[in-house]
Length: 288
Image 1 (tube, rainbow, N blue to C red):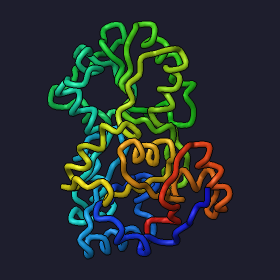
Image 2 (cartoon, one colour):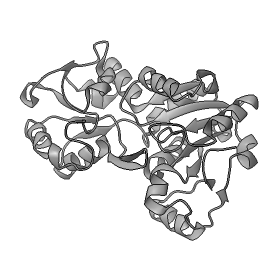
Image 3 (cartoon, one colour):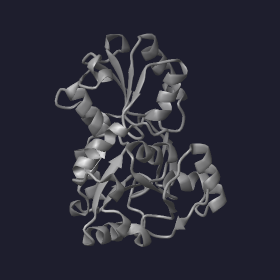
Image 4 (cartoon, rainbow, N blue to C red):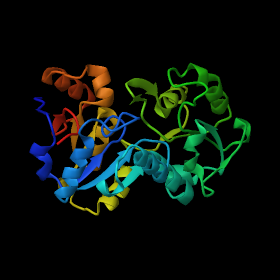
């Protein structure tokens, strides 16, 4: 397939009314917005477009909003935030989805304390030992053991597996770029569990279930007027395809780390063929 590379969003902007934007790797680098992003968001707002941020972050929307405040992303530039943490919290509270309905209340947590908004308001009860838990809550690597390798987590994961705990993986991403550094996410720990035959539920993109709340936040029903922008084919692009909406492949974040800052159309076509994805175009970066 031929891959068109757009230098900026303006040429295609009026094709859509709703924009579903990934955060890490598209809007910001984990520390600050990418150059041109805030101007682009302001242009979309001026044209009456609606923006929702959809991220596989293992924290609730209010936590992420506070983080965006600190980066200078004004709240009136977007209509809402949906995160894998928000979805997990909701599904743990409701217990309506079949996988969640079978869970007990007690969770053993692997991850940093900053991610515990996902069990607030009684969504789950944390316990100190795998043998006392009903399920494993995996929000990703913690500061003490770092985010470079799964090896420091393997023994703890094995203890949870041997205790028969199903795993709720609150971030399906395998890695993320933070200030130019590639760090592992909860999905990398889930891969270890899956290798052993563990029961894993990955909450977030590419599961189409997360796009229902996104459409509600957009206030739209016509999917043909909605586009998702993301830097990861197997979550962002695949999720959009599963949800029945168009996608743009942002060549920032993990894509830039994997393929450089100026990948050729031929290389991009090869990657997309391997991934089985077909975005409308590739986007050099989210700028107007």
